[in-house]
Image 1 (cartoon, rainbow, N blue to C red):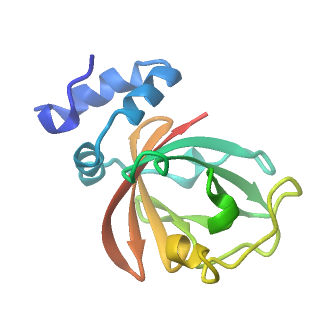
Image 2 (cartoon, rainbow, N blue to C red):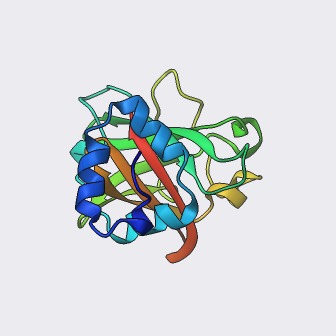
Length: 178
């Protein structure tokens, strides 16, 4: 069993042990981490490149997610794809019928990757829901003005922090690449 990040004197050892786990076990660790642990991993996050989050042209990459929201609202997926020289994504979660699909663009900013809900692509893959602006309807309460800033934990696993209107919020999430 891995020690919690906040109890680890050596986060590098924690990362090495986590990175050695099979992907399903990493996902189980992710699903068991409370907010304070995600915060610690965010604060000590590693550089992340855009290439680590996307696949080849047109290949949709699924990232299983866990956030610090209430149970029932805490599990989701982010699907990302590179198309025509740009990257974009969508949230897949059980309340999308209320909140909307949560489309976003994906870009590298310094040593982070940003999921930008304020800038949308001009089209989406055929199998995705149609583009919907994130500043309308109930979706604006979830996605309006939001940018998720993402850092690496280990290869194939990242941690993110929510920023809204340029200001940090005390909300975190993690993703495991599937």
